[in-house]
Image (cartoon, rainbow, N blue to C red; front, side, top):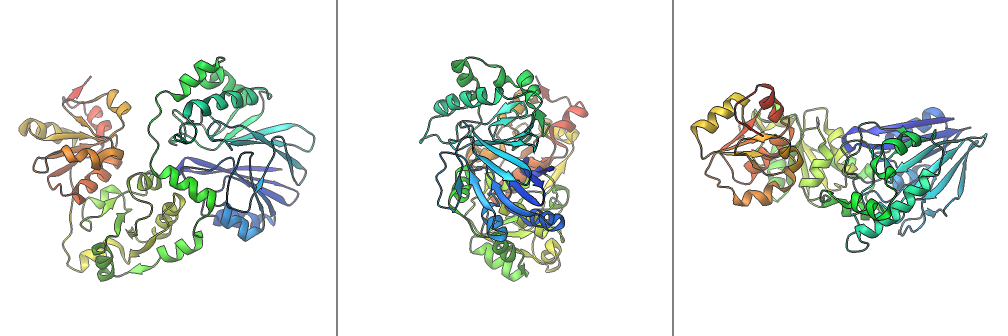
Amino acid sequence: MIVEQLYTSCLAQAAYYIESNGEAAIIDPIRDIEPYLEKLNERKAKLKYIFETHFHADFVSGHQDLAKKTGAEIVYGPETVSNLPIRIATDGELFKVGDLNIQAIHTPGHTPESTCFLLIQADGKHHCLFTGDTLFVGDVGRPDLLDGKITKEELASRMFDSVQKLKSYANEILVYPGHGAGSACGKNIGKETFSTLGEQKASNYALKIESRKEFIASITAGIAPAPAYFSKDVELNRNGYKSYEDILKTGLTPLDVETLKTKIKNGATLIDSRLPDFFELGFVPGSINIGLNGQFAIWAATLLDLQSEIVLVCKPGTEKETVSRLARVGFDSISGYLENGFDAWKDAGLRYDMVISISAEELALDAKHNPKATILDVRKPEEFKSGHVFNAKNLPLNGLISGSENLDKNQEHLIHCAGGYRSMIAASMLKKNGFSNIKNVWGGFEKIKEEKVEILSN
């Protein structure tokens, strides 16, 4: 028996590979299916089932392409409605994979079709639960993604029943969730990527609540608004999408400088995926920096329109990774990358832009000598509340453009986040929107605290 977690850090997402006697199953695959096919080929295993715990909102599944490549059956839980050729399991149904049984356990709450899958060994022992977005380490799935169709309170009530159902299983069963820390599918997911049911019964706040009313109030409180792309990804997973191979083929089209200029002129969005430290030294005017060193795909989908045409500037050699990670979250219209990267633009003698980065100490000096300067903190509200710079304006990155309408483009803006990743995204977006007097605080709030700059507020 093989059970392997395949974790994708930029999505904080876990897929799972299960194998027994030459037969395999994959749970919650991501869109770029090459690693799964390589593993199956290497192991000389036949993929029998693709189990989906629910319709994912934060990424596009690889179920459709994987089924076409392997002939495997796509399995969803009860209450599933889809236009795809899938099998809808009944609650408690068993699926044979080699010497193993995998049992569907319907656990609605995150979504109506949410289903956990219990792996039962050949000797009948319950080995592990693949809990999808029903149960995380330290949390449960958010119940608010179907507002307008089903209220969050109704889904939370169903989640309460699902949690009681899971609590009836033995403590020693391993828990393999669909996400780890950083995912927006839960409020406060722990950093561990697996646990046991006993550990969760003892430490997970949601599993310790015995009252339905208290449970509903607790899991519906303090949920951050869902990114707009979530509903679009659900529909792609429900009804189908362009093949990953087609996206990769188009996205990996090399573009010369003149072609790139034409595409930008015609409205294409230019993403520069280089690290912020390189981007700030020179970039194509109007480009948005979302570095591959962070949650690249999540921020791209949160801030940009999935339907827009995308062109890329990448560090040479990272083009495939950039296209793949964008495809994972639903970008289907990537029309190529600037051949030879930013150097091609620079070598053509074309005008380029820059972002000035300053130290924490320089931030204090700038704020002192120019009291009209706006200190923009683009962290989340809860980060801001835990400590911030005196007189800073909190404008979270996901609401930056709408919030920037109230900012004076003629004033100086000093931008920081926690460590410098989000602030460079913000600086590039403001530059694109006509703000010219921009400075980025290198190292962000962590450096401000570390250097004990005397502009902190309680």
